[in-house]
Length: 304
Image (cartoon, one colour):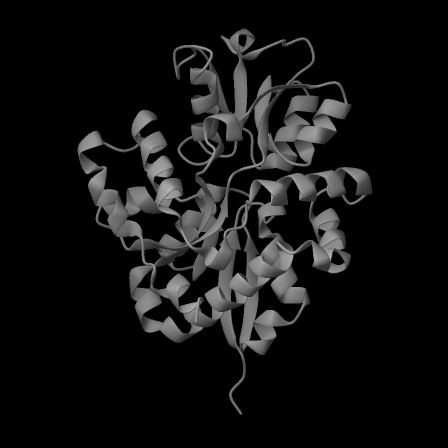
């Protein structure tokens, strides 16, 4: 009898947006689809993207910008599904910093200089007339838990923080200076990415994985399942803070963070491309070519 297929799945923090993944694991959805997941928690989103490019991981759930850039440079990285859109994230600042304008000359902690949080922060700070790199400095401070410690230690002045850590910071006297969904109402926060040759050679396993994750998304999006979902969310966010975890899960789900069937919405992808152009990470004349990074056959299969 053939055993389960092992898929090496990489990520940076493997935190709150991975809730459907952990639900699929603990509810036996992966096992039912003949899969065994080898979780690679690499500590940064850049490392997760690199792991797929270099073949030390099969797939990653990570911000999409690295895959877009790789594709436009002639590489094989592809986006095969959307893990999360409509991001529940605030720009958190140390006490005494009253507004976005007061971040001029300050240090902003991010998880990457070219993906995810750096791009979101630029969009928000642009609303206050602040531009990078002239008006503030980015500091590579790590994932959200590391950024929270860096804020507390005074190593950075502000950082984008997801729910429920934004609510935790607010309770501790830190300021919430702006909401990422206000400037980016729909964007791909994290995508499922793979390398084209591996995807071609492992189509059956990839289809089973996306099908499993789609079931996980449907499960967490249904409040009727909260007896299962809430304890998992609390464990991966604020283990000792059940009220904060409940608030974070409710807020995140009401935003519609986890897309049905992992389908990449055109609006979310267009927003991703637009902010890459504005951040200087994508030439304007390559905008249309960016769509070639999308490989939608697996998310389409999950619908059937």
